[in-house]
Length: 84
Image 1 (cartoon, one colour):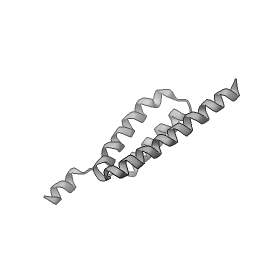
Image 2 (spheres, rainbow, N blue to C red):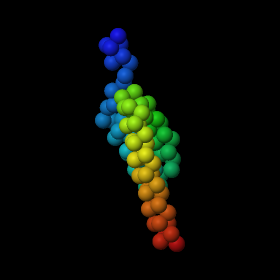
Image 3 (cartoon, rainbow, N blue to C red):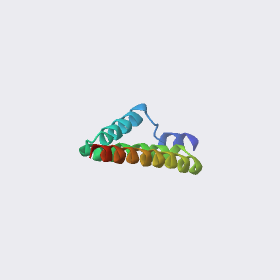
Image 4 (cartoon, one colour):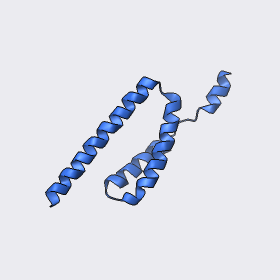
């Protein structure tokens, strides 16, 4: 039974993390056409992560990601205000 469970859980490959970070960087740099790729790569990574982490780890991870997103949006808004 445990070998079947191990086969069902997909491994998190470094490429999954790299693709997600690259897409996020491109979107942050203003390439908004990359948003679809970010959602696709982020979704794949989230699906694999949910199979491995406990609910507490997931909540903490999502909180960290959300806080990084808030800081990124604040900096982007700040730079837009200085540009005007």
